[in-house]
Length: 143
Image 1 (cartoon, rainbow, N blue to C red):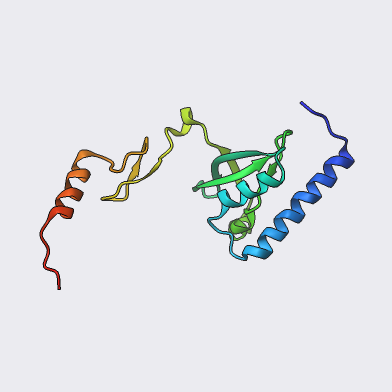
Image 2 (image 1 turned 45 degrees about the horizontal axis):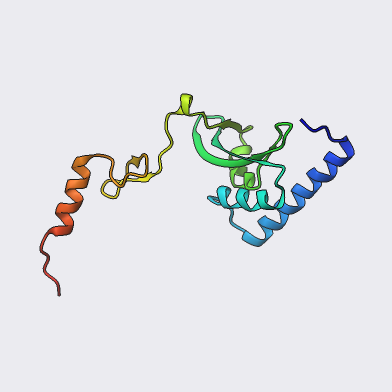
């Protein structure tokens, strides 16, 4: 663990905020850009760690989210302002993803029904796969 003087930390924190402000100014709408924003910020500040997890609001609703964390554990979230409407009702809880608690991560959506799929599969089950291929192989009247 590396210890930093508080004045150095304040300078870094200010640099993080300047970067976030510039990103928000450039992109205007940042909802749904948490991963790209964090990835880009990580390129500029490699001392940060990329975290995948959930934002939990005061109604206990979990939303998938990405953010960054300092060595000391402080959360740096370049897209937190997308949750401003939730923050008016109270604070947000950041919960890091843990496979033992949350289960496996989905790697995509089923091409047939839209349910989550895992391990880079294209379909959630054999029935969805059969239905998709049946549909694709049907003869259609073409204008």
